[in-house]
Every structure is written in C-alpha cells, then in structure tokens.
Picture 1 (spheres, rainbow, N blue to C red):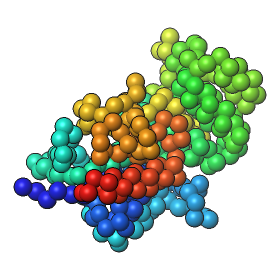
Picture 2: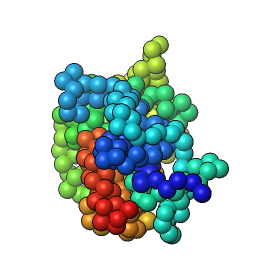
Picture 3: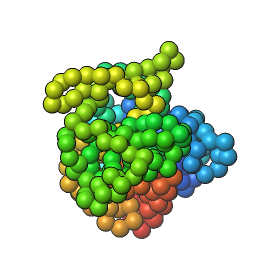
Picture 4: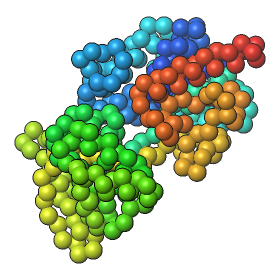
Length: 310
C-alpha cells in the first residue's frame, strides 16, 4: 500500500509551481507531476517582461526553473512524468502514473491549456522565434513590424486590435470570407487603419532566415489552391485553446469547451480537488494570474485538510 500524500499537484506551470511553493512551506510535502512539458507554456516563451520583480525581463524557462527550485527548497518533490488517469470516486484519490498508483488526500489540477496551432510541419520550431499564441505576452516585441493574426472569432479580432498598439501593420488571415466574431468587434476591426484582411487564405508553410527566425509564410488561397510566399515578421495564432483535461475522463465538471468549473474559490465539484491556472481560466491566461490561482489553491488545500482533520 503506497503512502497517502497530503496533496498531489498535477502540472508545472506558474499555477502548479506556485501551489508547490505554498504547500511545501505549509509542511505538506507536495508531490508534483510536471508532465511532458515541465514549466508549462512558459518553457516555449523566450523573453517574459511582464512578470513582476524582473526589471530587465527573464527567459520563460529560467523563470520556471527558479520557481521549481524555490519549491524544492521547502520540500516539494518533482517528477517529470505524465499522469495517465485519476480515480476521484473515493478518498484517498488515486493518481496513475505509468505502472504506479499514487494516493492523495487532496489534488490540485494545474495542467493548463494548450494553444491551438495549424499543425504545419516543424511548426514548434518557430514558437518564440516569430510565432506566438499570446498577444498580451509578446506584442511588445513586434513594435513597428508587420505581423499576421490567424483566426476569425472574437479572440482573433480582439488580439488583432490589441496588436495595432505595437505593430506597423496587422494582417488578419482567415480561411473563409466572413468572420465569426460579434458585429461590434468586427466593426471596430474594420475601422482600424492598421488592419488589413486576407480573406480565404491559410498558412501552409513558415519561412525562416538563416538563423531560424520567421521572416515569411506561404499563403494558400482556400478557393483556388494557389500559393504565394509573403514576407512577414510575426504570426499570432488566435484559433483557440484546448484545456488539458482529457486524463480526467469527465470526472470533474467542465464548461462546453472543457475548462474546469470552480464552484467557490478554487474548489471543483469533487470535495478535496482544486483547480488552478489556465485549466480553469478562459479569460486572463497570464503567468501572474496563474500563479495567483496556484497560491489560492494551495491555501484552499491547507484549509480543507485542517477542516477535515487530515
């Protein structure tokens, strides 16, 4: 019979690692499963300039490494393994990792959400090298440059308008001839002199310079199939996010898009299971807000254990 952990944290972005810091300082000795991408989405982000405390900015992977070391200093235990599934039907909860089963009094789900990309060959090589999925994170780096936003919904329109604060020109690439965004947002976009629409177009290839930096794309006309290379200095994906909740197999309540629903504070619908960060956040999706949620979840875990004499 394996030892019953006070808490197991699933996920290792700002939410998971902040939760690890707080629960470790509360002497709960958290067990953290960091998954296949330790550090979450920030590990594919180069410069982070909007996280408090770093005057000159900091590299995303470095920030996550600092957080991890801070948590380990207080006794958290980290494993770079993927959680296959969980059993929340009874306590202690069961967490299945490879061929092993781990037991826990409480769980913090901080598995985040993954931005959707186009699935083009070698696409991941351009992430942080001209390709981004977060306008508020990376827009500043494209000041006075010409960039593209891919998408046709409210998020794409909102990001395109936001990026005009920095970019010289913003092209919105959409595979159809009309947007899905609300009319008021479309009107605002069309009235923006820095925005141009590229209707019935899709990106089929990213073009690098000799250093691997994005300098252009191949655009295909979705009606004629014709392709043309177009110089561009940045591409922002705005075709949605997918919350990383498949391993839960429907055991926790979600919205229609799969994001975890929290009933009060960070509580899910299962007693003793808490959610933090982008896995439950459809609005902000920032490192600092995820870290705040991680702090809240850790405090909620501590209070739940006290209230239940665990």
